Length: 349
Ligand code: NDP
Ligand code: GDR
Image (cartoon, rainbow, N blue to C red; front, top):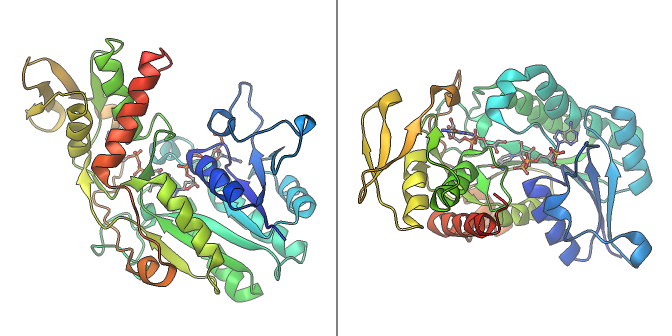
């Protein structure tokens, strides 16, 4: 019997890669998408087949993490073996501007799904994956960060996600629900949202090369992140739910780099070496050959409180799940710049 999965956040980066993975494994996949005034399914359009045109295992439903009755109905109708709760207001900086909405969707949304499982008495059937995050570690307490490292959230987003983390642990202990947290470090891809720093950089590199943009403005380039490829990480999500008991898991590469280094790697893909000068808000990056200014700081992108250093220790997932990242940072940068150059060439950037 093939399994059934319900994915919230199916239209996002991870939702698209996870749908692809589960469909390839023979799952029936139900995705929850928000109503939007313009199309928001670009990342999954290649997976979707109109049910009128023949057999399909991929279904989309309108829904929202802020709407409990909607979630209960969707869980009841789809009777999922596995729920992947990927939906979230996922932008850290935006969470400072919309803290209440972020808490509603990211914290209470998770509670609503757990309650749906409980109300519908699906405790023995339905497993829940919660998209927890390395942002929980926030202000550095220990490096590298692992499952036992204390949390110290540094944004409304992280504060909401910490509630979601603990409510999963609590429902697991209180009601025996199979709820597992994946504490995932940053993962990127050509499908990454355009306002996250990696994609913002790779799009800018392609647009500058195409003559469609003159300069790239960034915030804190000293921040260090442990960046992997989203395709590797959705494989880890699936493994987390196949484990015999519900536990909490770090997925990371075990390597970290600054935003500045990411910029250098991305420009190198179009043959440009960046030379840096100046400090703090005056720092600029110039093309070493022509002297043209290509990178500058805009303090608008600084955050009220920053997460300075993320470096994960994935030993537990390596040993107990057999999970390991496959794609290195230079390979990731190459894939992202190459995809954005193709979009620029097609005038779709
Ligand atoms: P994206 O921002 O790409 O996708 C988020 C998804 O959630 C989109 O489908 C979005 O819909 C949907 N969504 C937002 N708000 C709601 C809501 N109120 N109700 C229903 N759906 C909603 O995120 P990613 O794919 O990168 O990340 C997936 C999850 O993993 C998120 O929870 C994120 O916080 C978490 N995470 C991500 C990491 C990363 O590095 N990518 C690392 C660790 C955790 P729409 O398309 O309409 O906007
Ligand atoms: P992050 O990702 O906050 O780690 O959250 P993001 O790419 O937004 O920022 C990474 C670092 O880059 C610095 N930065 C900038 N960031 C953005 N977005 N835009 C800029 O112009 C810019 N300049 C510098 C940031 O200050 C930060 O230090 C992501 C999200 O996917 C979360 O949902 C997820 O939980 C975490 O990763 C793990």
